[in-house]
Length: 526
Image (cartoon, rainbow, N blue to C red; front, top):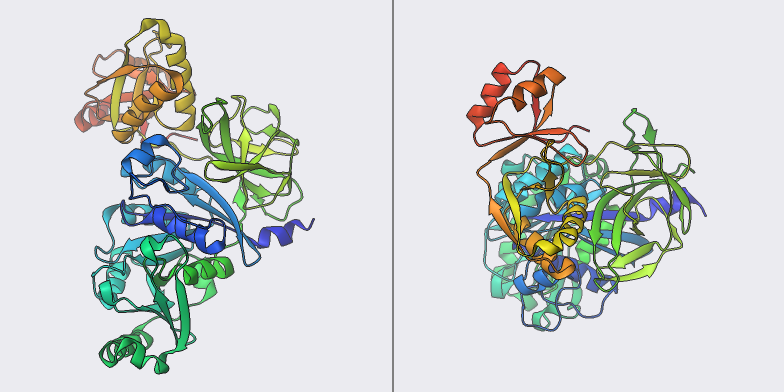
């Protein structure tokens, strides 16, 4: 098989947005239009039988939110697409950052009634740092919102990003009729279906010939807006898009399926193919290389509670993956046979015999893999790691039934490997009294729910007053200075690295000013 040819037809992308902008709904509709599913569930309809395909966890179904990342793989127009749906809730930002390390492009979803919101801004900055090509989709045109020209200005000014509309909305709210393809000057007029459960019908008509269908007033208004865009707007170029300097803009309503197909077609034809990746030594690994390599960006336990499985999600970077192949873990040099690899359609999975750069493969993990691990078919190889961020909330576990200590330890270890929470241990007390850290409070709620459902352990979380955690870099003298003070608990993380907890910024600054050779890190040193 031609590795370069297979890599070229791969498109691996993630969707980023502020909560409630319609991200999971858009994910469903991309699957619908690709033919991967025939009827979309609604993430908002909590009592409905058809829950969103990509939200498989019971807690997500009950709340109508996404708190885990889903991997969705499907074909469209000869391209192999890997769509990574990410958590919408801000408390799960770490999971989103890990996903963005595994994609080649991003779709930025914006609620056109609200413009660029805080979480969108933060996530886009991560995309900018990674120079990810980003496609913008203005959503919820079935409701009234900002003027389209004002919305473009909002994106440009807030994000400092050049935007180029690829199509233009015809009305909004109840008057939303469809979009105009700005290249072909054709109107794509939509006929809505109930709740958008099946693909909406549409028809293409030359823009100048649809006055009777949409009305003269609306036609004149849209014509004037398109003229302004053409006069003042930037020109789309593949290079600027792929360099992350320009974002093509699409308009639509994911709920009603309006405008989804043009977006899907663009992603298939123009989104970035798999890119190269640097090792920690500075070498560049190209997708077309024969040597297989990949990295683990997510670990999820108990996707199938009946089988107590543990799945490690691997992004293929180079070469060809083959079922039952043996690989070397770059972190420790251990060998691992990759048996029963899977591809995913949310909770549905199928055995994978081969995979190529850009593909996402689910591996059965016997407990040897960690997030950020590099796997190689020949020789030890280590890519730049996936960072862990300092937690902002802390607690201790109070076990209701002391006889279930073993189950608790197994659950905490597993869920920390997944990144649900972080665990820290006191160096002089062993692992009997762990401290738990989370970036967002909702992570603790998920922890309690999963311990109860998956490990049959009921716990109470005793919240602690610490507000900051910092990884410590320094000499043995530095650590002794910190440990000698009662106001600086120095713990150890899963890799036995020292971590300092503090209740205030003042105490952190005091330590920096007085401890010899001390450096503190908000992101785990790689």
